[in-house]
Image 1 (cartoon, rainbow, N blue to C red):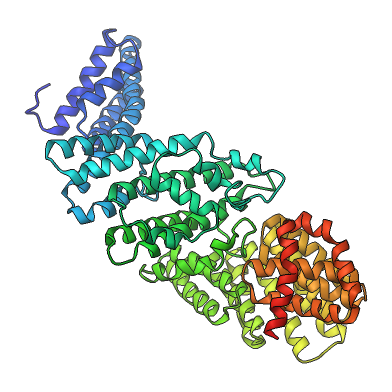
Image 2 (image 1 turned 90 degrees about the vertical axis):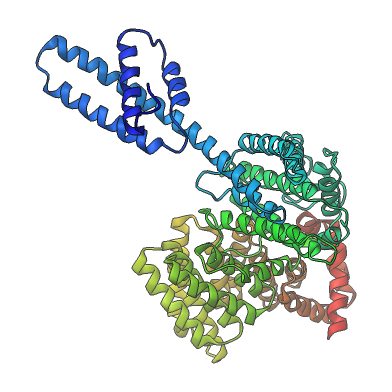
Length: 618
């Protein structure tokens, strides 16, 4: 074939040559065809080859259909089979060429960028949200090419990036075989990112497997619940290469964990609950690193790079089917270094334009702020998310924010607005066929009406019939969908309704169901809320023993996520202590084994401290 031919004619000639060689029996395997295509198709010209191949395939098909002579028809059929072989091997070759093209483009982008833009450029070309994300092998290949370029042109910054990539992948390979071993080591304790400081949990386990100083030191910091912000602020000698090594180590860890958790769909302890926790945990760590590196004397590229990775993590998370549009604070997303940690995600998100992903992350921030008692901030986040999701056409997100606005207005006792937003959510969810949104909207509407009736001091059961009907419809629908989160909310709302109606025994049944369902879904906020209400119901039934047990657990769990609502069960416990005297302490000690089984010895020992803190605030 002459290289002087126009590209289309060159590729037509190549196809004809492969066909003729096949008909002569000189091609014995499809691998030969694949190798010929790799050698002769120039990267970036695949569309021209595909058009030429399509023309030859159409011609051969028409000839085969039109030919009547058996001998000639047999030859045309052999030609058609040969062209189809080329077509099948082109799919393979196109993928290979696409990978080469992507790496070539990535190398060009990085090498032509100025030295202070290279970290951002590297993060952009390795972004997992790209249409064709790079695999670890392709990133290794990228490092080798960057190393060669750095040596050829005496570019030390390129060599530093290449060394950082190589070290980061090496650290990941050290950890890969120990990715989830920490779970089996702590099988008798909490299941998540917590553990005995410095001994159990993922960070301590991974820290022992590493040799490189920066990731090893970060994991040590995390294992002892120490401040990531302070850790980063103290890394004055960190280089761009060190940062790249840390970035790749954390990124591959996070993706590896999510992939493993996603495969545990039927594991009630893992599955999507821990995938969600992983995304949140790593996003927050990146945001905390950004805060720590944002100091005088640090390369600003490190701060910007941390924020860039955080946003990449959140964008990936927002696209997952299990993104928690209705969830609360998840049980495995805890530990003192993560308390109020979602605040770290607020500032970086302000610099991002309105997108579907941003709307979803703002939704998460909004309901988390409600759990923390930051109601004005919650309303602000949800209103922003509502506006963005409308423009983006994300109906499930729009409906979720209507529901969340309703629930936040309930908390601040603006029941007219709460009912208004929940009614809009019911209408929109039914119009769009969003059954999860409808189940939550029915729960929101019923809950809003119950709380409005309570404010008006109405106790007649007839007044609550409409509200309870909505809640029962929502419960039935969420049960059909297998939506534990919505079920938990409906159980809680039904419990509150019956508690308001002074039907404490029925309320107990619903709160117990709500607590159990919230445990399965991993929603720590709803767990604490159900226990708090359960304690009130038991108190009304004069079952003081169970009131002490449930109020103690509820107070502790709500305090662990920094929810201001921990003070309600604390107030009840203080009243009980005053009424019961020494009998209160005796009862509390008798419940020690049951309490420890849920929150551990440290949790049990912390409960009296919390009560003392509440007393000091009074």
